[in-house]
Image (cartoon, rainbow, N blue to C red; front, side):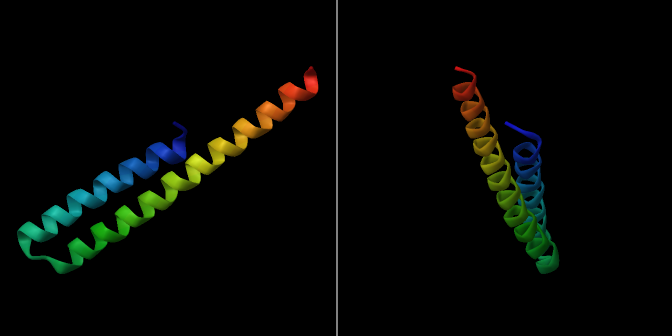
Length: 67
């Protein structure tokens, strides 16, 4: 897991907490903010996973060249 994936997971958790707090307090703004945080967290996590895949492919290509 790289930094982007970890930050994405953290943002998703933060967003979920805001959503729950918004539900409990009937604060629609807070709930919507939580939904936005979760969506941003999912995007950041996906970016991190993609970045990791690219890094693995580059390393694999480098290893093949060395042989």
